[in-house]
Length: 174
Image 1 (cartoon, rainbow, N blue to C red):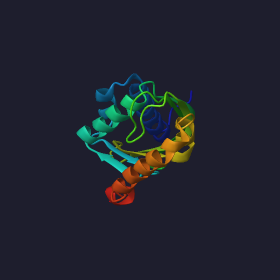
Image 2: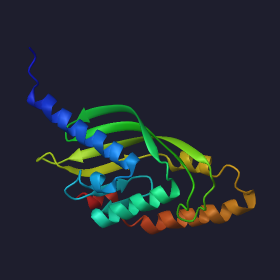
Image 3: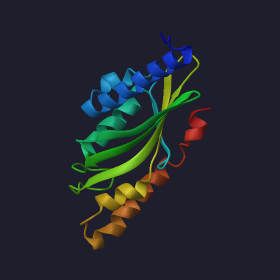
């Protein structure tokens, strides 16, 4: 009989936490998602956004689900590495509400992403750090938008990114 090693047991616990987190996000059970962290902390690397604490992360969830009420994930692969679980996945959704300066387009998107779920020495989830290509998403969302409207929309979107540029994820983890 094979007895699980402490490392295998730790990895299984972490994996359950991460998979429950993904499932709760899709169900939009944000109380359950937030309970996977002792202190919720999200870092969106492409935009420079950092969401820290229950209320800030809950606002992020609310805003993104207003924009993409059917947002969901398709997990491609999950790996364990040191203090983290690394998840490669597809993020999908339909743009049915405002996304910052971008009014709803009704377009769908599908973007390949990587999320690092970082655990501390006590095995608490302390950070979800997400990497993705914003251009991949925007190219899909902007299909059919009148060309004359694009400069204003893109300028407003870039202005929003400039406003979050002072929140550097690396400093937030220090």
